[in-house]
Length: 171
View 1 (cartoon, rainbow, N blue to C red):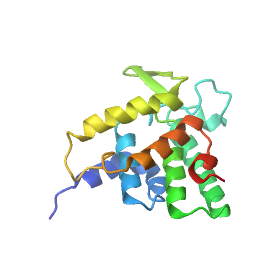
View 2: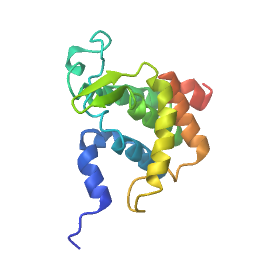
View 3: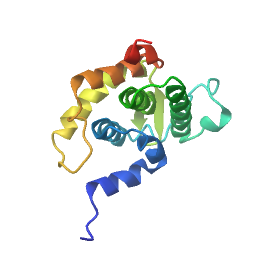
């Protein structure tokens, strides 16, 4: 068949982070991350820092948030490897790293986003939005609906903290 699948279309949008998403071994966690990212067009456009003081200068431009996310995942992967975390612990941490700034920018109009200082916590409302949206999509699309509540809680809790191997592993 020459038909383009929903996953192929998703991969086109997610291409800047596909290397990082593909590090997640658990298919339900990967689908969760994909679905969340696909619902946040602002994430892909905003700088890594709205104040231009907390991140390297190359993250202060449009798409800087994506570059920042790639770097956070790279550091987390090294830490998980060095600490001998299990695959599921690593997947949870990588998911949280990819999503940690998902709601950092609030779209005010077509070309401008404001900084959401509460973004580590507004991710919960975004997750509820994602669940409602995923009830409307086909089964061939990524979805947050197939991930156990316990794993969702762990991922979102790490996002709340923006740090947090302790919360996943107790170490």
